[in-house]
Length: 130
Image (cartoon, rainbow, N blue to C red; front, side, top):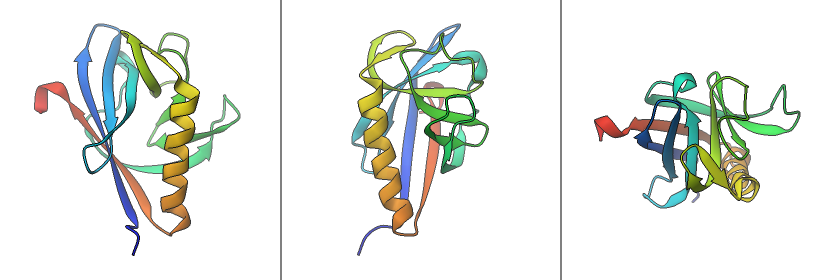
């Protein structure tokens, strides 16, 4: 029997004035990828329902979390789409590489859960509350 519920955990591990770097893990604590966010546009820590939608500005599918998006890209400075969580492999503060491949793997994992009739949640945990 497949689990119809998936929880993703975003651990924010280093916050600076403009950028926040983190790590995205699954419910078993296995690392999925690194993340980068614009510090002034982040969602507050908490639990959020995840949906797959077409991003209105990027015109491709993306992961929507409330008013924020999990998307691929190189860094938080190039994205002016409000609250965005950029996935990939950490390079320097606020910048990730290999973003598209990590993003595609994440989308496929989420799609499998939805195809089984399940739901996905994102739990955001800031470093000061761990």
